[in-house]
Image (cartoon, rainbow, N blue to C red; front, side):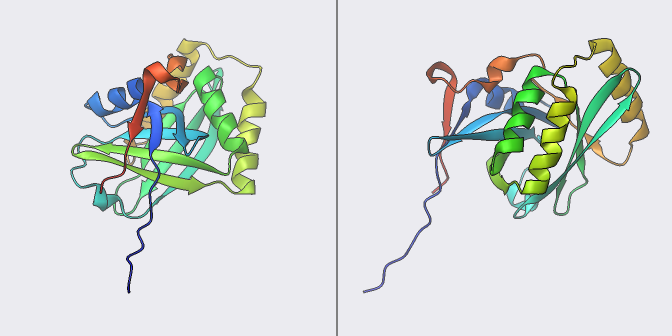
Length: 197
């Protein structure tokens, strides 16, 4: 007798407001939060790509690069996503922002994080491992900015300057930057993503 073995993908729980905002945004966008996988909470980076009709075009994974840029009285954390066959996507974050601090600090101690991509016809997720070197780099970002705050106008000026320089990469709109409630996974805001059969 022969049996077919099927890998059971886990259900993922995330904040429904975060997911709704990413799905509803008409521009390429990004939001930070957390996801629960088998009762284990991991960091989440959610990308909204409304022009993406076929999620299979993303391939089997992505590369994530990051760096800290300083100037104009502020720091910025630049994240760069590279998916197979697509132009890189960039996001500028204020590393002193509470939401950024919590998610980056979680990446610095986690063994993995999730990237969720919402296209025009569905959602897919990628689970990325975090090695020791990456944990150290994200930990340094946290330590560097843990006790600092950035004035909104200083970050906005630096953001404008950096965005004006980079014409080769698609820029993501940072959603929920001032809404730490999107980090919440409690019952009233929980949304369960189930794998497609």
